[in-house]
Length: 49
Image (cartoon, rainbow, N blue to C red):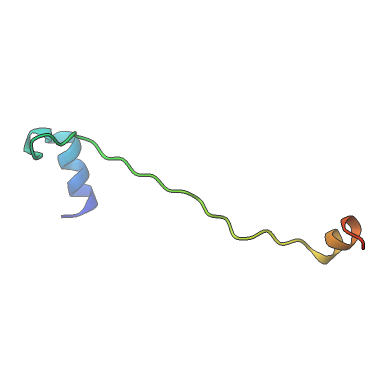
């Protein structure tokens, strides 16, 4: 079954879902950015030893 077919069943044919299953789809995703990097110019200018 494709995701498109699953979505179609969930939204347009809820009576075909197993008993107790709520119709609809939900997805979540968290963005995990890469570590920050700074140019050497910024580092020397703002973090002089």
